[in-house]
Length: 93
Length: 299
Image (tube, rainbow over all chains, first blue to last red; front, side, top):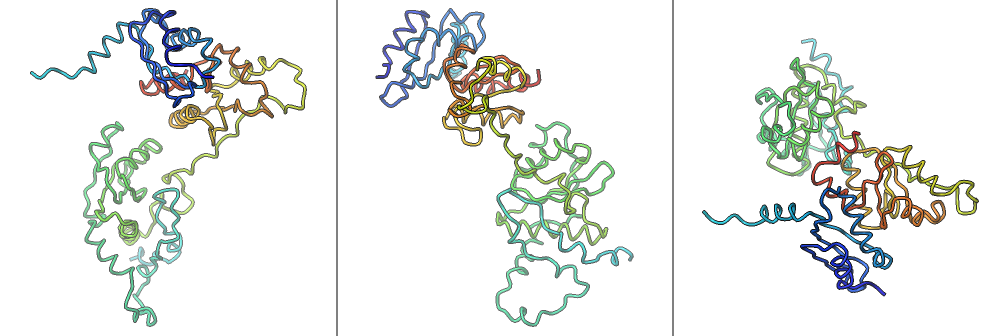
């Protein structure tokens, strides 16, 4: 029995109060592999390693079932905003 | 005239071009000795054959690249990034000259700028200037002929093979990939009772080695995509690292659980630098993309 995308989202939402969260199930249905993008105030002042730890511990229960968890982005709201702006196509002058 | 006398056929057997790619063997290189014979003796048996591939090819090439002496000398920029802008990234031959203007090496490459950059990095003191001849024909034989024509021109003029092209001189040829280190084993085997806790062995291992990667599978054949990416990044950085296969139940039995609690990290691979967990594949990849790894490994 694997974990569902909804379970992962619910745990992360309740524990990290993310302002942006994207969970993609990459397992092809068995629920053992996820890719996560998460933006949370709780990452403020934390190194990447610590941020990943925060996510990992928020998913402690789920991790027992998950084989591969890829945290693509773990950003603070501020970093997220900057990145969004950088990625936005420039309006035509 | 003394130079002509020195033009002995001793050089001939060793005159084979440096390898273009490590997988290529030089077995298909035609012997060029006919160039060096004092007189082009006739070959009654072969000359009657309607098809002689070597000669027409040589003719094509002489028109494809200018002779060595006619080619302009270009100084090699000190900065690596400038080399790509100044030299062509195309297929061809190149001759490297040192500060005194002495020819050091004649090479052939599918990407001249990249090859010169490699030389510049490995032997900066010998890479002062280069001459470049682009070969439009991508055929390897044509390229080889172009290389030979430059080599022969130089030998004819000086009576010497460029030092870097002498057989046994490995300064300029890409080193064969270093033999991969064996993966480290934590225990003598599952049949031996450990006298110290496994955790202590892990602790010692990561503290005594600068870079340690705990991966699934061996470093030469990682068994998971993430481990594979980590090995790829470490190899790419050229860093000397140790690897431990966490799936090896015989010699690393119990390691996965021990390591998870030791590092407080739930997944593999795990990369340690100077005894500290750097992270898993995602973190290493992200640091690699941001160019932060070089400074990490220097510490």
